[in-house]
Picture 1: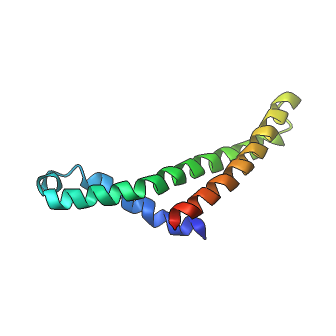
Picture 2: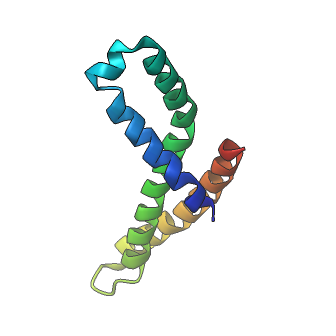
Length: 102
């Protein structure tokens, strides 16, 4: 549910990034200023969301590695530690994202 609310914000952020490089937008001070303001307001949320996605991906990788019998025990233990830490980090990031959405 949380992710579904943030995805459109990230899409808009990316769209604004592209628009800010267009000569006609740069030439229109009013439009440029409005876009910069919107871009800056979305930036904390999108930055945190991208961090969340990165940690989520690392969590998935660590989850797969921690139970891989072809890896040595020490490596699997390290992967399990990383997985457990990623779960803690994901919870923290979810809470931070909820706050940023307010």
